[in-house]
Length: 554
Image 1 (tube, helix red, strand yellow):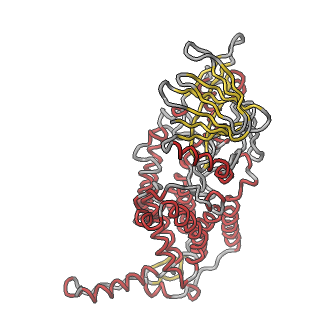
Image 2 (image 1 turned 120 degrees about the vertical axis):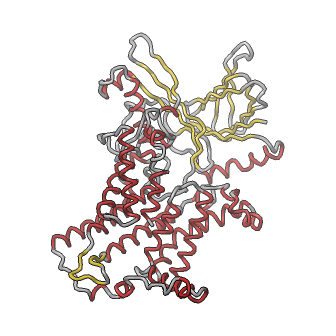
Image 3 (image 1 turned 60 degrees about the horizontal axis):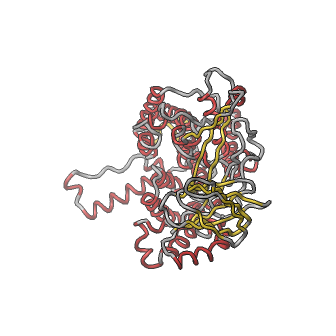
């Protein structure tokens, strides 16, 4: 079943049906896990995808399982590590399960005599390791949801508008469905369902809830084969004989409902029924060499320790932290943070001329296939180096010459879980030459000025008063740091735009033009000003503390 799902995953999410969309020449920058990894050509990717597809088909029909699982695992992880901006949790899980199946296929034990036609048996620790991995997905996802934003309903607010929640929305209302059903019940489900799957008395009921949960995910999110894979993988908690039990029960039910023996004769009893029931300890097994025992023990213990460590690796790998902990894709913090990207500006500064410095803006979407760099410092650093390398006149120039001739600045405005729009990187730092270390905090990442809870306490009253006067008003809350400016162009006949200061002090400057006379206005907390249309207003934070203000338009 896993092999069949990976056939679909290879064709869709891995990109086999359209490899040029992810790896074509129009995508100028990629983010390999290791910088020395060789990057294949487009034809090379097609060959890799062909190997992946054939190996998954082999796993599905159990043809040369040892070879097919090994080939799939190697090609999957190679393609997966070529661009960490494409990482996500379910792809990471697929790679882990593929690795465990490699162990299962290559470390199986040969019996000294065939039992029910079988010559091999799977070691019991493989079952325990697979159960441990599925349990980790659920339990750590619940631990990561033990977060203020999640428990207060900010992380995936508005999901109740999906058609799947229509009956609940009629009974409870949208706000209650968002908070209690999606956030609270989702938190309780992830945190506890793994324990219920381990307990024999509750296993069947927990599995039924798992199926309902993942089928609901299919309707709400576009997450590929992940829901179906979790439904399949959760079966590992049942005894190994569950297919035999299911077959026997279905056979009995069918014989009661339909006289099958009159049509096709007696339904054959499933093979391996006797062998499946026989305790493995009673079978004469080959002796295991001490070296193999120690090697297996090292593999198992290392795998378990790594899986427990990685979700909390942000304590060590501090260079991957921004407003959240660690890179997205291996810490099981699924759906906890939602990013709203307001504005991304990449400025290139050419210092090659001794007389003048040329500055120009670059379009972010022509350099990479996604916007994950907008909120991950490590990816922003890699993208800046890639841009400098691509735009350097000499293709053989080294990294030091890049930093001497070209500078790349990122000005990214972003909000997390519906909070303030604010900068995440310092816009005056050249990211090509900016320091970065895997084990040290990134000093050019600006901290989050205020979390969502404090944001609500500060803005709820003003938001309510604005919407009471004008129900269709557009509200944008902005937070910025001292000394930084925001240029806001108001188109002609756009409407009345008001700036209200909630915290700190700002200076609003309107440059003089043929239409508007220049002026500078200092606004203190609880003050406001109107921004003229058909002009660019510059809002600069004055004083020594960050400022928070509201831009509203009618």
